Amino acid sequence: MNATARWHRCYCSSAGSFAATIDQGVSVSFDTMRMFFALAALLANALVIAIVVTGLVTRGKREGGLSVLAGAELWLAAGVAIIATLGSLYLSEVVHLIPCRLCWFQRIAMYPLAVILPIAAFRRDVKARLYVVVLAAAGGSISVYHRLIQAFPSLDTGSCTATGPSCSTPLIKMFGFVTIPYMAMSAFALILALMWAHRVNSAAPVPTSNPID
Image (tube, rainbow, N blue to C red; front, top):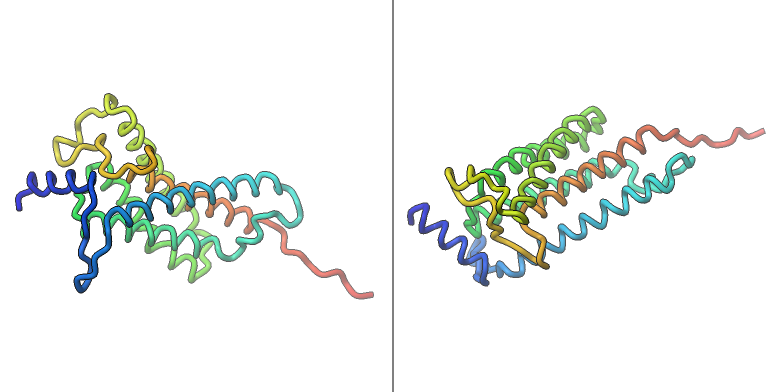
């Protein structure tokens, strides 16, 4: 199958329902998987809001509300990066949706996080937070731009179609607004929120017990 025919198959299948064969003939409905990805993105949005609001409301207090995440921020961020990476590989390697140019840029930012974050969590490496924030911020910015040109195709310069699939045509669109770059943006945003929580908790004073008279 040539690239043009494969792209046509991928584009047409994104609008309907088909079975993607996984491992030993186990079939998972694409509709089910894209619904899962969309709900995961919305859950990530809710968690970002919860983390930011809790952090701002309890700011300055001796035991902030983000302390409930203390010690788990890097592990949670690692889980987000791994799930996002596996999800993107599912779409390209199992469902055979061809990533556009901007999708590849977002992958370049996300895939290293799936390696850096688990190592940083295991080693409790606070300094890794800087690298994570830079990658997540870069990837998130590209995701925002990608979603923007999907919403307003006239902003697309056409650079994507010169080398592959269109960047302005969403292959997945759930609930009227959740597309693949929106999912990526949600993952990057949650990773950034968790890094902020990690910074806040790392800077919080360690509570000490009262001396016994």
